Amino acid sequence: MPSAVGAGIVFIAASDIYFAVLHSSGQEKEFVKEIGGGEGTLGILAVCALTTVVAPVCEELLFRGFIFRCLSNWRGPWPAAVLTGILFGLVHGLSAPAVDLAPLALLGFLLCVIYYRSGSLYLCIAAHLINNALALSGDEGWGVGRAAALLAASAALVWLLLAAVRLASERWMPATG
Image (cartoon, rainbow, N blue to C red):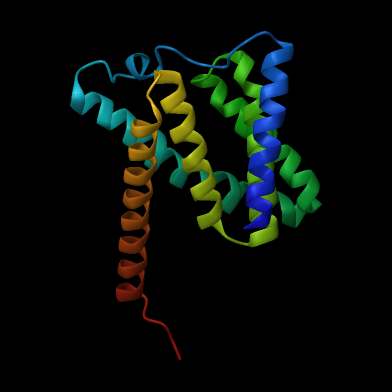
């Protein structure tokens, strides 16, 4: 857990400095509308779920659970974290402005560090969820109340999803003992 807090502090500080040097806010003002959330409440909720539930779970399974682990076995954890971070940033070039790619690569690297030090994809998913919820809330100009509601709802949905997967896996693959 301390590595996750430290990674969060490093990411926030480095991003703030990066965007200040570039004279950019790093905010995407029309993100929800651009990805189909401009069609009322249901569209906004779908974008929120995609951004703060689906993306953190799927991206962490792919980038930290698979790519980072494979590269770690090949070249060790630090080169793997750098390569995975760069790949994480580049992949987001399909949906994020170019100015955001360096901070996203840093985030990808730091999530690898969290995974390497904690051994937990759950912690990476949580950190990724928090980042995405705060970024989405900031981009949309939502206040603290909406941001907190998004964080709480997203965390609850991820917890339910992971609990359901665990329950299903225990049913189909009982523990041997």
